[in-house]
Image (tube, rainbow, N blue to C red; front, side, top):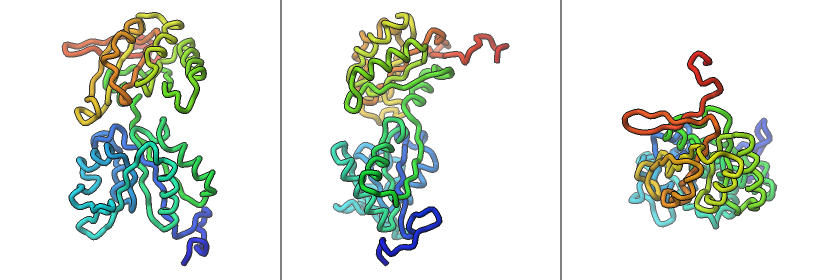
Length: 290
């Protein structure tokens, strides 16, 4: 029976369609990936993932090893289940979205893998935009959330996000720098704790903008590859400094896996014998206030 002849289900989706899952795998290592994400990837007929994420998922056993994957990307499990594994790259996102729609219409479940959370500077918006542009409203789409860098980095340095915070991407690929600067300034004036993503570009300029509205002794954490241990591009690390000195530590900013957490006027340090943490109280500073 053709797709056109398929009878729609109760929600308007043809019965013989699969589902397109946009799956966040967090940092990518098994301890920080949800059970739901693992189950979806393991059972999908087609998995779309970058080389790095494929490596993470194979190390975990979520994907079958390369030795049992042929040159067409087809891996076969012992129980006979076949899974197609497709390499994703930045330059192929539109092409891969359209291919995913075709697979779903063929009745296949597709797992489109995103690092972190797919809706936090991830792939979710592209999938919905492409579905609208290609008149693919027949495609069932499900977002499987993942652990984003703001949360992973916050956990690595203590509790800096326990009060109001915001995230700002420094990538000017999608937004002009004037708009990014306006958001940074508004966040600094509003005393949000600020998490900067995509610090591989413009991070010094971002720090200088925040300095115009916030004191230089505000604490800053520079976090790399949160939750990836030694498996990331540059290795997991965290370094605590101040806003006035943050731009002097460009050697700590290693690339796309770097996030900066800029504290507000309440963010303080907490120390034990081993390390220094950052804590932003919810409001009251005394235990009796909780």
